[in-house]
Length: 86
Image 1 (tube, rainbow, N blue to C red):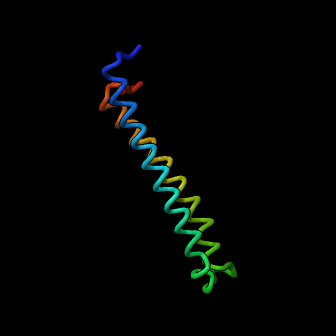
Image 2: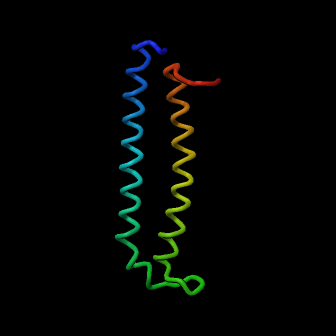
Image 3: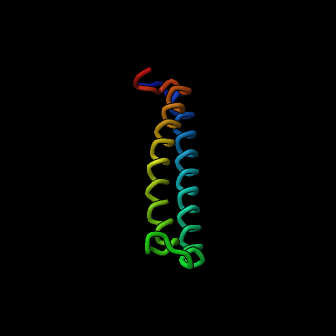
């Protein structure tokens, strides 16, 4: 079992990082929904640009966010000596 002095900073840093990621993803998702009408004037391969950008962009953003989150969480784990492997 991990001692309490290591657990508290790890939890605090993980919560802050998780909250930051949720706010960032919500802001980017909202921005996509806000600007979709302005982008729908243009088309790509017969699809409105707003639809194309939001649907494909959100998928790419989700994949990048997952890898960034995992990498950053592992760095937090190493810094607070909670990493399962090194």
